[in-house]
Amino acid sequence: MGLLVTGATGFVGQYAIKYLKEKFTVSTVSLRNTKVNQIDFTGITQILHLAGKAHQMEPIPDDIYFEVNHRLTIKLAKAAKAAGISHFVFVSSVKVYGDQVKKELNENSACNPTDPYGKSKLAAENDLLKLNDASFIVSIVRPPLVYGPNAKGNLDKLKDLIQKLPVLPLGSINNERSMVFVGNLTELFIHILKVKQSGIFIAGDQEYVSTTRLVNTMMDYMKVKKPNITIPAFIWKLIKQIRPAIYVRLCESYKINNSLTNSRLNFKPPFRFEEGIEAMINN
Image (cartoon, rainbow, N blue to C red; front, side, top):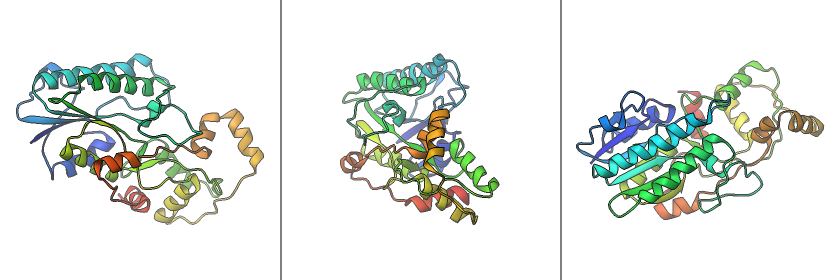
């Protein structure tokens, strides 16, 4: 069975491709360099669509997200269906839920994206599900924050802070946040590609993680010994007022329960949180 993977040069793609090649006959395509109508689908039965415009902290035009994450995805899916491809796996994001930090969410929770990245992913999901039928199975995977070897973004910044600051101010933060080790995400891809089940699935590790536990575990594997102190509540209140986005990421919970996904697929994420952090630090 031939598997076509888009976005194979990205952070998730680079990790996943070597394990996918152990299970499938894999070919890759760059949608930056190849137009959809130029893709040769000969021998391909499944597509893992990883390519997309990642969430940016710096503002970019909204239409870039919609062009890449929505319109290009649907163009690829329609071409794949016309070519007789039987299974299309789309990697979306928990950003489709928006910033609903006050309650635990799951596969059936209402989506309320608040930024163009989440809105573009949800638009793609909705249009893909319209293409789903007995001959063209659509599987949608919503990962939370992905960590692992060569992870960029906020985790890379946190790693730098741990190295640079003499004292860390992130002790006693008892929030609960969903994360997924890229190894667990890859195993979920492999499982979905094998069972070919349609629907919406949530990726995630076996447990939620607090900011303090994340920092302390990273320090352990970095072999860094520094105090991780508890700062006064009034300082956090000040941060919440001045930099609310930073406060939310560091102090609020964001729980996406994926037990329904694991039950439906008879799947258990094989790697523990500590194993994932060790792989991220010691890659």
